[in-house]
Image (tube, rainbow over all chains, first blue to last red; front, side):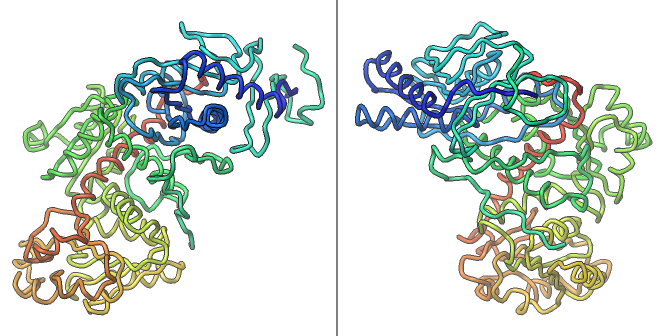
Length: 192
Length: 349
């Protein structure tokens, strides 16, 4: 497996800041806004966007965490149940504008599951989607409203987002499955 | 075996943005196709059940307490013995996961016409059952069912042998009240001899590091001393006594077990009144335990016999929490077991 970096820590920071500005611009402020991160790496990202909004607007936007495990459409396909991480919403979602936050947008199935989960909690005014990376290959009619970086990929590649809060380092990498044993990942250039 | 199950993994009530942002722990999967007893569960398995039950507990608090995880799966509940809470708890749990539930009471089924257990199990499987919850008066019956059933079997209680979901919901309730049971004094008081609840609780509580005390009249604790000896040799903290004061002193949890009237007839107890006077959990006896000690009972209760009504309904009682937690724990188990007989081979995200 070979891997190469496509976003550095600084690029992630700038992208997150830009996402926060876009969200405020689109909403014309922060009234009624709630950020909900999708477990796991959407959760720290949502926290960062909230911190960025607090720094520029001086407003604390409520932040929640959503686990979509129970709403996945592939539970009968996987050999083993995924580990449930837990859902915690700061308040009701009725009438609010929900910004769903996730690290990578790929097939769109996670977002479909997240929307199904959200509507079980109430009736938001609107649901919007912010992602750090959009790698294409949608299988459902879903698009992101706010994108940190568009990265064209092939289906054989894997986009790995590392965040300080979970992985100890900020970095986005792309890995290509070459069907060879794990070696010195990161030293070879992908042959894409 | 010296294991601690739960160093602060309870995320309930944590502040919001910090949900599970600890360094990534290697996800530990679930590898048991059936739940027949708890003796085969490792500390990691117990921890996974507890964490999954936490998530289910959160689901129960939602405006719509229902998730679609088991949509299209058929759960058959086959009970050869009377039960209200366990059967209904399993049914509610399965429905909360959107499963299709089929209920069979043996008394009103072909079992009454002499159908064998194996034939009944094959029949419910042919009718589409993918998960089978069963209770039987014969110890070991679910093991026989598991041999012929193609899906997962969950033991809802078999004879005097095991009641795994009760033990797991008891552990969950203790963790909810105490944070962790490691090093805590847990007393189980009453008719141990006929109790499948205690036989399962021994495994889970000692695996979780509790200081377990079993207490009852000599006629109802026999046989457990030998087990306690073997447990102690294996590094588990496990005591048996007939001295109720010694058992209750500084206890963190006191669980009373039901005394059945049939026991009088068989000469094991002189009278209900004498049992209540010598072993009943009264307010005075409870005062020997630590302040705020949890009072538990697996139900159904004989109030005024093994537990005084004011204790059962008192501030320290978590008996109704046990019932609610039972639904969460059974949802967790149905969910985890359902993953062990899916169609393998795909890894769609």
